[in-house]
Image (tube, rainbow, N blue to C red):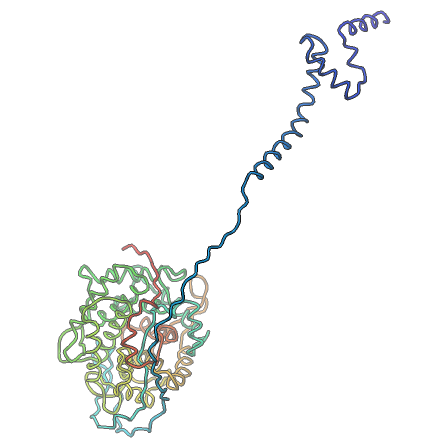
Length: 517
């Protein structure tokens, strides 16, 4: 055993392997590595040096690479020029403004209730005999009796509709309701009605039974709430309704029928103003041309916009609303302004000397609201016929669902509510406190009946002979009344101001909506 150990020791000594087991200091190890790297590659010293270099390369790299990186970053930072913020100041010479014309101050004239007018008794509105004429509800004719033209205090309330969308956005609706007497209760009834109308829309985008007219009324109701094809909840409903109206216009772009013509034109004009879809502009202008060409030399209109000697106040009201919507929507027709001026004479022709408007001539009754609102829309609210019409409404118009006014109360109330709103003052405050409460109470509420489990609501007219179009029309006309707070903006300017402020482009909110027909 000892012999074998000696042989192993001699062998290791021969190849200089015993040095591997020697304890060396760091300096000795470095020196030995340097010497070994210069030795023969087959020698033990070289192999030892190579092994030590391999062992030290990994930790050295881990230390040196970050140091080199930091050095390079420091070098780059020192070479980057420092940035300084510079503010360029330009001195503008002050320009003296031109002297402004002195604005003439107008004294506000308070609206005071006039002395009551004694009038002969007259028979209430007679029932209509033809189903096709149920929207007109002719009033019983009253023999004209002269009275003073100053029987009613001056009401300065021509209507300026600044921006057809202006008060219809969600935030502006709340502001307008607060300003003009609406509330969360009235708006709740509106929303329930919109849900019901949405649920009643037919697959083709229409509403029954008179599809064109009822779809136009429903579309007006959604537009009055600021709903467009881009709206989240009602966008698809509005888009389908618009597409149906486009198809109803036909290849010649003109609506056919009776009341369908002005009501559908009214809706298309508003739809164009809110969406700016070019196809709607073409249809609206084509039908405005039909209405203007159908106007009588007297300023009125008859069924289907046909030429005749008959001036129908109910039909004229829808024609005036269509013309006003065209004006607001900046639709073009060379005779639009002249037609609106002439329409004032048409309304005056059917005005009663003691206040009120008749069906086809001077009389009194439920159609008085049509005449008053039409003259307000036409900028003629300060005319005697309009003032006396308002006084007639103050003395005779009532809003009681259990004891309805006239044979077509919902139709009459649609106009009276708007006329009172645009008149403003005590007339509106008293009416608003009455009509809004009655209308909300009269709504039939269907609890959790919508597709998403929310309440819906509708109205059925209390009138015995209202009209044959039923629940859809009643619901639209009632909803439009509760939207009066934000649908249009009332003003109390002079007639001159109305003429100067008919351009609404600066105030019109344009909503670009892509609709493919």
